[in-house]
Image (cartoon, rainbow, N blue to C red):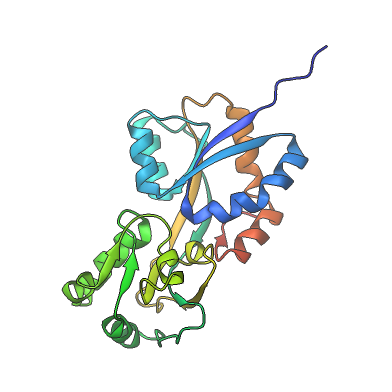
Length: 234
């Protein structure tokens, strides 16, 4: 008898959990005999791709988007699992002075005092930050000195192109050459929940379920905490 064909799970994953998937890949392969190939983008970018017909075996996006895809019939009913949450934070280039952001007033002052800021155009953190600066009455001032793009905003701070980078703490921690100042003040914070689900057209639904299960183990929970995430399953 020949060997069974190797299964490679197709994953569409938000940037917020990229470091977790990279970290667990080898252990998952050794423990299950399965592997996965992941494509990483913002949740909104990936949802657009799924809505426009792109498929994979599993998607890891924000909980809101997984719920929307279930409603659309693109994610299988009953396959959703909430994995982790992350708050929004700020970072500066490694070694640079860290402004005080411990209170809403200090946070507002730090943003106004910064010469330049970066945040994402379609990531959950960037969308929330854009709403937050309007609520604080500093939207025009911040937009005038902001670089707004997708990807890891911390990379701009690492290169010295901006003074402050804003993104999910778990995404900031993926970037070398920056220091995370800390999370937003509690009164201004918004936690994002990341969830997984099996796509309706998945070619390997059983293997996808195995990966989602692996992401819910105590060992993976430990990895999540080390990456700036709060695990929701252990």
